[in-house]
Image 1 (cartoon, helix red, strand yellow):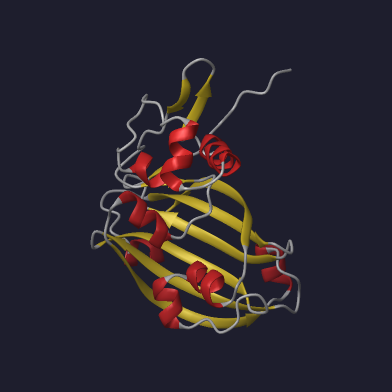
Image 2 (tube, rainbow, N blue to C red):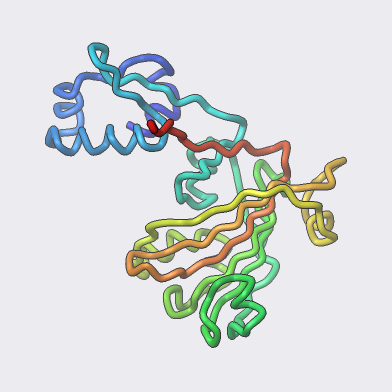
Length: 229
């Protein structure tokens, strides 16, 4: 259902098929359909309107739309946006967290972590610089090949890990010498920066990532609701 909304099969302001039709289409229970619709509503794809049905409210925010409220890999985001991507791995290293890294990243002192530095290309243009730290005890065996493909796919498909929640902060920062060296910034001297602390099903923070994005090539979206006093 999500893919059909993204590719326009279910158009904005149109209604999804009836619950009965969806049960028949996907050969599943009504409860499964209701959970799916609830999840689509939570990420801003649909809205249930009394007397009308479930209306599609999703609109593509830009040529590459990243949802700040959904945890997805670049591989998954590129597929959803129908764009070509590849990754150039600059660094794969291992560190033991000291006081400085503890204060900066949030990992416990003495923990072993992998550090990855990667340049992300969209349609052959270098537009993202990713700096990732992964907790070695949760994500063992990281290699350059895995880093070039998808760490999340490796975690879920090979290690059986669950990626559950992330705390994110979005800022605008001045471009560094490294940014200018590896990214196609053109006339820009700043980047949109997403900093994330990501947790698994055991509540363990296994990742700290700072993604530095060329500002004109990405749109970040989320779903907001108004709280009543």
